[in-house]
Length: 331
Image (cartoon, rainbow, N blue to C red; front, side, top):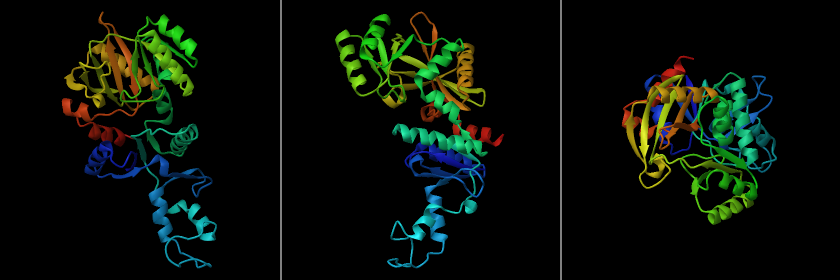
């Protein structure tokens, strides 16, 4: 397989997946959302996504015509020259298509950028490239409101949640949820931007600030979870394993926020919830976060379609990257 991995240059996950893929005889290439180029129509009679590195390599192989002001070597000097136009419309017949695109990053961006990136992934999938996770599953999982609503509709227990845009509606929600809420960004991961609010004055200031920033106000009733949660990792309709994350000094239990990871054997109920939640989003690989309240009730908090597994692999001994490559080999 030829595998493209959308990841940052310093990504540990890119290196881990590349290690596993290369050991199985596959090739890997790191890709960057900001450097992806779409061409329509293409030589393949469909939209072609071209990594920027491939464009540079192809340009170097093209004959460089002489024109007034050119150096006769390398890339054109004038952006309006015929050769510059030739550089934009690169012949795609020389590009070997990727068999699989693995999404390991969802960088922030403007609405236009986010929509364009998702469009790129959708076109790749439509043209026969396997995208993991699929654009539809990413769109669902990255949107906390959409995920929570679908989980609830499927009968899974979720914390009581109210989502709005106006500070007055948020204040009403604050009181309706018992004056102790967790406020989350609609898009985000690793606990970034999540705050607990249990004071009316602070709630008013928080909601007013978020409204002025044109943010959606996503409020959940705070669940006293004893400082721990459970992460279940699912791959290909199978539970790979679980871990418990403890954070004695913070209600946020993300390992990225210094929580302590411990081995955990998932219970039958946890596995049932995790498999059902993953199926709802349509993800091939997902991390499901579960919380228990003081009465022992289990809630599904989040479905992460770009799940981290560095801490998970360390405490469980499971080689997630190798398992992922082997799952992809099934076709």
